[in-house]
Image (cartoon, rainbow, N blue to C red; front, side, top):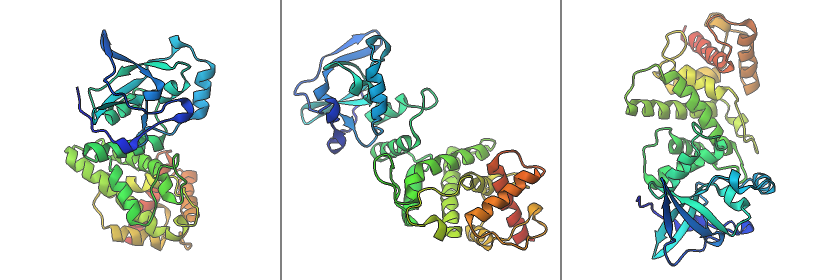
Length: 334
């Protein structure tokens, strides 16, 4: 059995659905049926961990309640924490089912073989189950890194620190009011990570090299966007910005093909100057009279690549942005 550290301050009730998070003085009886360890729990003894459980979707709970059928509902999973001589059942998968259940006693499957947060993330792995909302997954992974001290392979904590360093307020917008671009960090992380992984998949790298590239490209992308569009991106109340720039820019920085990108080798200050200067021209030979200054200007320029069906550029919009940055770099260095 895995011993998972218990965070009493994060263990919470869901009072409106009768989950009171009250501890048990004795270990609940667990019975084994085939491969499963089952336990019957009073709902008043069940709680959640606020740090990694996603926000409740009350509409989903209502829908489950209206069509409740015991034969159609899978058993929820719980981790039984032992703390100071008491036992705290905590949901790792199925909080909406437990909240919707009409029963006072809930039959659950115990999953104490790995840390509770790990069990929660595994149960909601998007490769095997309909995925969590992007914010819930990002912040749950951050909590897992904090607690289990694992390697930040996807640069989750690194990106949070980068946002803070640049003056943003990274937070989970499903649990707090977003005040700036930091409220959209989970979505931006996903876009950048997908772009980075796509460009790295054909390269033979050691894990540490791959993680280092992920960190560098991701954080450099944020720094460059912040520098080039600082006034725009920091307009009061603006929580979304950039669209495909978050895919196209990391692709340009990392693409190792000679006529497509920089292969991860560049001077970030030079890249900032190139984009801030705004000099551009399709194919990178003849600069246009008008310079790019705003995000709208850059977007319109990227659309020209799309409309002209520039040779060597695919139909993905992020690739038009990538080619725009490449041609700006070519003009700067010509």
